[in-house]
Structure formats: structure tokens, C-alpha cells
Image (tube, rainbow, N blue to C red; front, side, top):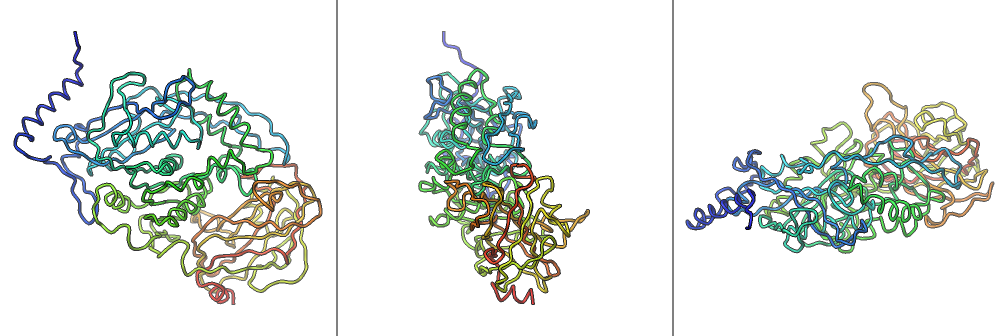
Length: 614
């Protein structure tokens, strides 16, 4: 005898109500999204959490990454207004996907790589933790639900492959992390199968979906909307990534140098794999063997730091051809974890494709979405189809140094169209302060620093005298100067050893400390490079001790007003205690001042900087 479960009975009863009620009277749904000033408004009928329908299911993908011979299924939860059931209302979807929903591993340093090693040496192995899952709860996350469901959206969450109740294995930027959200979007459009259970055959349909999907999220959760968009999946109309990691090479390496993300010294891609691997315990050994201990071990290369096929396959800039979603990017200029270059490179590529784009930059650190009103208008435009003009007007919105993050200043574009490159040259002064100015120097002078990771960057920048850095300082500014864009530096240098770290900070001096210090007060921007990669990030060439090489690389993007009275300071040093490997102190770097120059993008160009330095 067939059994009728409670959920089926309720759905059947509600269906009968719809047919005998609204359908018989020829009415459409009485509760509808409401819009004002181009934004979706809270609708009372949608705003009672007690009536929201919450369900979880599993969407089948096109890959098998846990080795069980079956296509992996992603765990999905749905939260929607009751009218999607009782009145046949169809709504667009705000979708968030993440590897973090079921918990993560310990951050104990024994699970990180030991950075105290010689450059080019084989690193010592580290321990691998196991994630203890936070229970098998039916609802994955409540993120974004309270914002969007009352405004006429369905909110969907999913766990990434190999995390939580999703099947498969994490790959940290591999193809399955793009194809997993694609499968969910395909399901929302009726092109993929969803099931009530992880291994069962009873299907679930997204009959309440209009098929239009927007994605958002921060950090890894902001990376995955970009990953999904690179598949070109139909139905993904708009994304709002916040502080996304768009290249795992740029996250764990810098111009050929092994470099940690800020705050996580010794982290690398295999450490992140362990950190998120919260999936089925019985399937973890397969992923550990095939992904972490084979693909990652053979590809990540902590010996040279070179760019290779492994890293190339985890760089979303290489996958932009199918990308067609409207992009609203968000990042902080002082994010030293996922650095601001990550957003700019994808924003620029999307802009070059002619896609609708906006970028919001604030002056703080990691995270920080655009003002909600702007996000609301972006999704209202592309998911509800309301002509609110959000795609027009200023392309860039930048929070000025001491402004409220909710009140960004509009600009025609980023970088500022009025910015022009200005070349600054160096004059000698070691071990104290040398000079930094517009006039070309032809002194032929060379100055030497001694590497010592014991001193962090801020200590070196504040020091009046130090043998462990070279510091070149401008005259005090007579006027504010506005830097907007991507600075570039060429360092002509020689090393006493075949390998050396090279670190560069651009700072504002005098250094400010105390309770009223702002994140923008001291460090303007910075960058790192491996001199062995002076020709290409794909190939390390050991340095001949004493021979001079020209190393050219970009610093991190910035848009900052440096106030009058301050001085620009260019600091060149070797090992950066908070970011690089820690070789034995003593390597000497000799800088040819005449062959070294900094190019700054200054609003108003050379004339404006001359006025400020007169």
C-alpha cells in the first residue's frame, strides 16, 4: 500500500486551495514584489519568518570527485515566501554558496608550513587536521535571508563540493567548484535534477523560480559567484562579489615569490583544502590522496614559487570568455589578505568585454559590501527587470579616507581618468633617509641593506636608522595629492646570494600611532617579488652574486588622498616578516639608485605633484 507522507499531503492540500481559490476566480497572486525609487521594498506578506517555507535537497552535478562512481550531489537549502506555494508566485533567486557552512578545521600553526627556511630549499612537511562537522542540520545558513526574502526573492544556499552534506571533494579553485554552482543554477532553470535525499530518486523541482539568479558573498563566498559566472551558465544574471580571491597564485604567490596572505603566515593551498574539507568522513581519504597529496603536492611548488599549469587552472582571469553576468565588484584598498588586485583584474576584464560593471572600493580591510541600497538596485535591475538606471552613471564608487563607508564618492571610472603616471627617482641617504623626488638623479650611487626577518615592516619604516632597509622620502607635501591606480616599481639590484626576497612598501610619513590612527595613515600600498623571476613569473633563474638585475613589478592598486604635511616614503627591504619566507639573516641587497624608479598614478599628473613638492 502506498504511503502518503505529511509533506506530500500538505503540498497536495495547498495545491487544491490554489486551484479552487485563485485559479477559479481568475486571479493572479495577491502578494507581489513592490518597488520604490528603483529598489525592492519589504512586503508585509513576505515578512513573517514563521510562514517562510524552508526545505533542503540535493542537486546532481556533472562530475564525480569523491571516486564513488556516482555523480556528486550538492546540498542545497531554500527559503521562500509562502505565496510561492499558496498562490503560484514565481520569484527570482539570491544565491550564496560556500565551503564554510558546516565548520572548518583548526588554525593551529602546526597545520601551516614553517616559513623559517632557506629560499629554494625543500620545505619541511606539516600536519593535516580533520574537520569536525557542526552537525547535520537541514538549513545550511541564514545569511542574506532576512534581507532578501521580505523583498520578494527566494534565497538559496549550497555547500561546496566535499563540504558539509555536499558530496565530492574540495579542489580549491578546481573545475568542480565552478560546475557545482552552475548545476544549482541549472536546477533553478529546470535543466538539472534535484532530489529529496543524497542518494534517492525522488525529484524536487524549482517550480517557484523565475530562472533569474543573482549571487553574492564575501571572500571565498565571493570567489564562487565569479567561478559560476565563468561557466557562462544561463540564468546567472548578476553577481556582487565582495573581496573575492580571483587567482590562487596571486593569493599564495607574488611575482614568483612564495608569499602568505596577510594574517595567515605559512598558509598555502593545501592548508586551505584541509581547512574546508568538512564532507563525508568516509570519502575524505580519496580526496586527500587524489587532490591534496597528488595534484596539490605536485603543483603548488613552494620551492620556486613559479607560475605553472596548476596555478593557471586556478586563475579565473583565464576563464573570462564565457562570462556574461552583470558585475558589481566590492573590495577594500587595505585588504592585505585578499589583496585589492583580485577585484580589479576581473572588473577590468569584464569591462573590456563590454559587460555592465560597477566597482566599489573602501579604505578598510577584508570584506565590506557596497551600501545595501546599491546592491538592492543591482538585483532589482537584473533579476526583477526594473529599469532603475543603476547600470548608468558613475562606474566607480570610492569611500574617501575618513568618510562613512555607506557614503562613497562617485567617479567616472577607476583608475581616476585624470590620473597620469609620474616617475620618482631616488637620492642616497642610507642608513638614514634618502630622497624621493621628480627630478632624475644621476649620482651613480649604490646602497646596501642586510636582510633580517626579525624586524617587521612597520618597525623598519619608523626607524631613523637601519641597516635592514633602504628608505627614500619626499619633501613634505604642500598640497594634498591623490593617487589613483596601480603603482609600478623598477629595482636595479644585486644580491650576495643566488636567491633573495624583495619587498617594497610605499608609506606616508611621519608614521602615526595611537588610538586615533586610521588604517590609511601609514601604509599606502606594497608589493613583493622574487628577483629570480626578473624575466618571467614562469621561470626562476638563479642570481649571480654581485650581478645587477632589473626587477619590475606592480604594487597593489590604490586610490588614496595623501594629506599635505605628510611625506611619501619608498621602503625597499628583503624578507617581510608578516608575509614572506624567513631565510637565515645576512643576505645583502645592493640597490643601484640611478636604475631604480617608482611610477605613481597621480591625479593631475606631474604638474600636480610638482605643486605639492615645490
